[in-house]
Length: 366
Image (cartoon, rainbow, N blue to C red):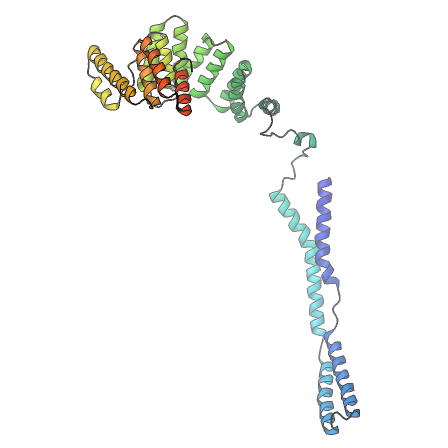
């Protein structure tokens, strides 16, 4: 109600601003013109009395000014006056009627007359990016309590709850996200990961079922395949786990961010894959038997080790060498390569940091 009262006051002010100049009377122009001519006649009389002009010149001037005075007095002024009155009346009617109608029409088309008031208490709960994450999560949860079918809200909330370690709540959020957003391999694998997190990292039968649903939707889903391999490892089926993870590495691009994690897991179950080879070497090794392929890989690893002894600045090269020794089961050489790598980049803090991060991804101490 207060909003409409404010709008009414604003409309009245706008109408007043239009009507104020229309209500002011203008002075008649003809009257002021006649006064000027009369003053000129009086001035001629003063000039004659003072001897400034002759009588013949004064008489001629009187005749001309008198003629102009009669013309000004007799000229018709009623028509312009009537025209001005009509214009003023039309403008006043337009201001009184047109402005309110235009204002209401604009508000109904552009405004939200049916929207309820937004109390101050509600405004204070608007999300602020500077608030702690837990406060933002509480606000989203409060929103979803009032709008439980908001699929986008569940989709945003679920991964945040999982990162906060609230796995049971994350499971519920992922289930709601699937219900209101539709099924997908990504959501199913995320739900399975949350179920495994709630079980302390154990891939339960319920979590495994979700990962299997994810691979049914997308056979190459990396998260689902990794956890299916982890489930096999936890069940004591190391060969099955190695087979799943080796298949993942065979299909994965060389720069896949999860590749080091899967390689470390493969080493853990004793199923070393072949180290990553260049595209040309991969094509050449495809038709080799196992012994020849192993010999080729050994030669490549030895050449890499020799090159790194000559130039130890290549952090990626050191990580490839350590990974190759690990997947070939030569852990002592891997440990020695780690020591050599750290010694080679010890003078460069940034390279040392990159090396330690890479070693952590391989499951070694950074």
